Amino acid sequence: MAEVAVRPPASFPASKEPPRARSARVPELRSLESRNWLIHLYYIRKDYDSCKILIKEQLQETRGICEYAVYVQALIFRLEGKIHESLELFQTCAILTPRSADNLKQVARSLFLLGKHKAAIEVYNDAAQYNEKDWEICHNLGVCYMHLKHFNKAKDQLNNALELNRHDLTYMMLGKIHLLEGQTDKAIEVYKKAVEFSPENPELLTTLGLLYLELEVHQKAFEYLGNALTYDPSNYKAILAAGSMMQTHGDFDVALTKYRVVACAVPESPPLWNNIGMCFFGKKKYVAAISCLKRANYLAPFDWKILYNLGLVHLTMQQYASAFHFISAAIHLQPKLAELYMLLAVALTNLEDLENAKLAYQKASALDTFNPLINLNYASLLYNQGDKKGAVLQYHEMKRKVHALVDSTLEFDPEMVDVAQRLGAALQLGEVAVWAKPAKDSKSKQWATASSKSSSAQPLGSNQALGQAMSSAAGYAKTMIPGAGTQLAKPVESKPVSGPEKAASAEGQEPPMEQEKET
Image (tube, rainbow, N blue to C red; front, side, top):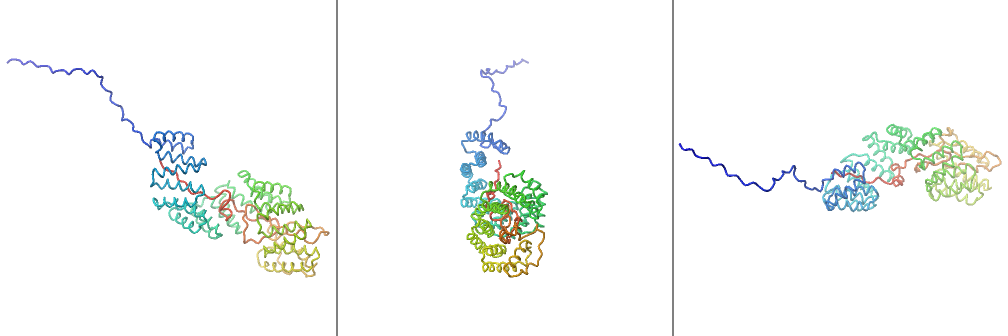
């Protein structure tokens, strides 16, 4: 059998081009959000310089349409105090993502910080359309309505926020609104609920203690303030309030020890230096008292309580011209307080300006129809000037006020009783029978005289009943019957929650909540 030759296969011509290398990975595609994680990392580390550099690069690469970079840039501007610039950037974010409730909330917050509360309410309402069950929106709407003094709408929004989610700040704002309306009892109930929800919040405990202190419920006040100091031993508000309670009961050394702790935390606090000054006044260290009160006056020149105390101390030191200066300044700031006019009349009497002293007593009597010290001093002045008929009228008016107060819990100072009895004997009216209730220790006096002239050569009662030393850490309670002596009024923190004055304090209201946007 013949063999068949096998033909070799035809070979392909060799390629002149070198073979292409196979790619190791898929080529990267640029994303608008590729650096968001790094921007977020720099922001939460508070490395704002690096964050701004990265944001600038990201916006250049994306031609300004990276929403998260714009959002974080706006947050940084707000932290730097550039509210207008932050508002413009947040509005840009709202344009890029029109249905984002977070962007609208930030726009509204910027408007709030600019004081445009009505515009902020409109934007918050727009945000609520996209997220109806957001407690933050309801809370912030309540704060805006509170600034516009629409208290009913504010309470409705804050109650809605509490139904959605309970938060300490919402309770505090709701309590503050009740205080602005003068409803202290309702405010206490709100704060009690807040403490039940958050029993370890020292600010809530301090606020509740201060409210009880203002109502003179000392046992509960001490309990809540003690709990606040248990959770936060460095809470200067609670320490200041506790020191004031001790000072009220005459424990000046213990109070000064407390104030020393507060001075380390807030060395430039006007209420602190006012109370320190009145501690020295209680210890009869008048030069030190004036020095501390002058410092308090330097830090808060428009606080009438500090001026009141300065006038009281100068009257005690018989520096009547200086007393007149400070009391007159206090009257310009608090023109409806009768005790100021009584102190002014005492100063004018010693400055031998008797006509203006009589006018001051008449003004004090018109403003306060309960304080018998005004009529006692006025009767003493008229008697010393030979006006026996006028002195008798004032004496009988004083007796009427004393009869009205005899069933109360107030205690009469022995010195006041002695002056009234001597004046009654001089006017041939006999002793006042209502002085039967014995006075307690001088630490608990409500009606007292700040100083007396024991010399028999001096006119009767010419320097009696100099007034009650007021604490600048306290709001003046309308229900408190003012008196004389060195007892301090109840302190209420500067903060915001113990009275209408505090709600508009220099620290201002709490701004709406800020929520950080997720990457």
